[in-house]
Image 1 (spheres, one colour):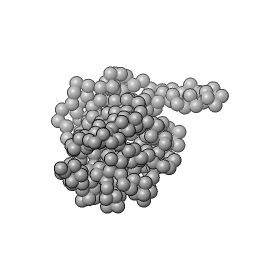
Image 2 (cartoon, one colour):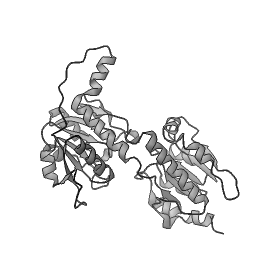
Image 3 (cartoon, one colour):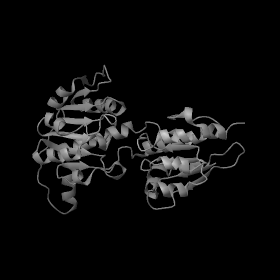
Image 4 (tube, helix red, strand yellow):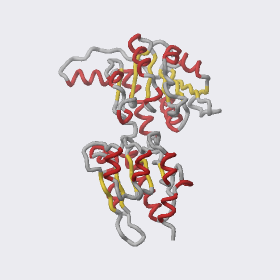
Length: 336
């Protein structure tokens, strides 16, 4: 079995380097080692480049920046599975993969603590201008004594009470914040939070965390009307998906002062990074999509794909498959 890993050198070192020996140690039933093929370029591959580079490979382990476009699945007849080394599969054409008989699977949700902690870090920086003072000192300047605001006693609003939202609620409550939650699919929350309607959350929250899933219905969730309903001068923190924010509306709210501060780890730029328009604003604290970039999470997600390939070598459909019923190529490959 040949396995192609799409990560560029920087991402390979950050996300997959420690798992690579484990992948190379896998063997087929006859004892033959798995052959691992790496991205030959110093950057992410386009789909035509990936088709050429992964020719003859049975499995593609795809970094989140690698799209799974329809032409990929029809152009690679030997491809059995496309494994996303992340949870988000929004850039994979699952219908096209299913039509071609290719399995699609995702990684485990090991990023929750890391992403929630980063959300808290962005909030702390927005509240106390930590990065701005650090930059001044590093540039040989004496920073002004910028006033901040204490988080204890303030109100946080979380839109979307999934894995990250529920974990983050505990962190925020732990530092003394009142936590409001709105999620139309949730009927109760833990002791750390209070379930409310969206209008109440926006009117009362000093900081808002949009953590809804990225769907056509939630695109531009944070638009001009949403921002106008927020408390004047409130803070917005987005560590979920860039599509949730209408960037132009957010920029206008920053300019007017309706939005007092902005923390971003995601956006509409390449690889879900914050858009330069927002990231460069003086009241924005931005990081380049680092939510899951911790050794604990990176290792866990990389090892997810190693585990999945091990399952396939054993003739099994791997865990976290999203179209197992359509994986005809995999079934045909291991048919006695």
